[in-house]
View 1 (cartoon, rainbow, N blue to C red):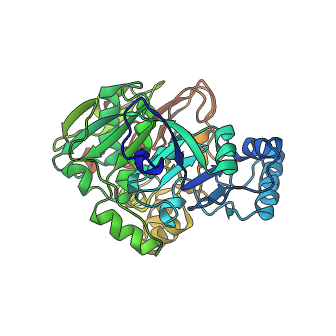
View 2 (cartoon, helix red, strand yellow; view 1 turned 120 degrees about the vertical axis):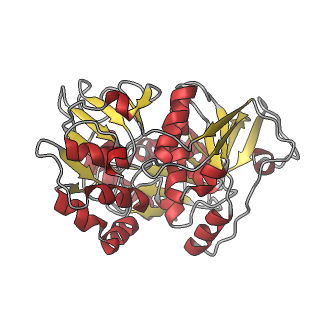
Length: 411
């Protein structure tokens, strides 16, 4: 893809190229710096990218502090001056909506001032996180330099057990490869188990590629993705496939037929264990949401386990659907009613507790089972809190028991 976007017939790993950028995005945490850089460069208006530039208010929704409210106001004033796609607070997460609204499509090159922009690779796009200064340059010139990464191929076969999810697959891989196992590599996921995954499951896979150092994580757009994208937009796109003679730095093979539920234990995402190894640890909160696990499939899994049951009286169960569309569909399917009756707290669509600034901040000594994307100290509040990252199935089961629980018992 970098060869095509740079106008070259072929590129090699390690080569530096200047590529055209199709689309770019920012959020309410990163866009204030971007706006300052934009002004410092004396730019009169942003370069008109083919796929557009997008700003989302999604991290602090609704604004919890005066400072956040002021930043939101500045963002609104900025977007009104230019032809910029703007998503107001409450619409949803900035990494989910480009897929949901058909803005990010197969074959596109997307950059975002958020490291988890890699998530967009779930629809066969080349998607990478960049700094706000780099993004300001993209808005100035419409292109950006890249060092062509080496590639890793991960083949995942077998049929997932009923209690396991895409999150369990990527946690298994992350635990094996470690936090630097894919450092500045393009990670390609393929195999029957990957093909079987929904868009939600693929998002979880690609989003956590970053946690093992990957530059991008990508799943080739198959018929399932093509059909999904066509329902979202009538804009054109091109499915890009790996060359038949593609060379890989490393190739890994997995069979997930008997995969156990997995959990990343604090303080690192690569400290992964079977849930049953840490089962019984008392918790104070569960969080079901985030860019990687706030989809309709995730709401359905949580509702399935919590149906007719109650959240433990000493546990706070926070649920955050990632967009209004997901929220509305979850309402129609009855998932929201089930979760509410079980004792869960429903929060506005967005990043929610995942970033530790709002709606579910953890106190010192507390423990949380989160479906988010990171667990380093201080990620969700106090540096003395402990964050265990798992699937929505594990989080829901743990919410019922009041301790880390293998979801297998609920199937």
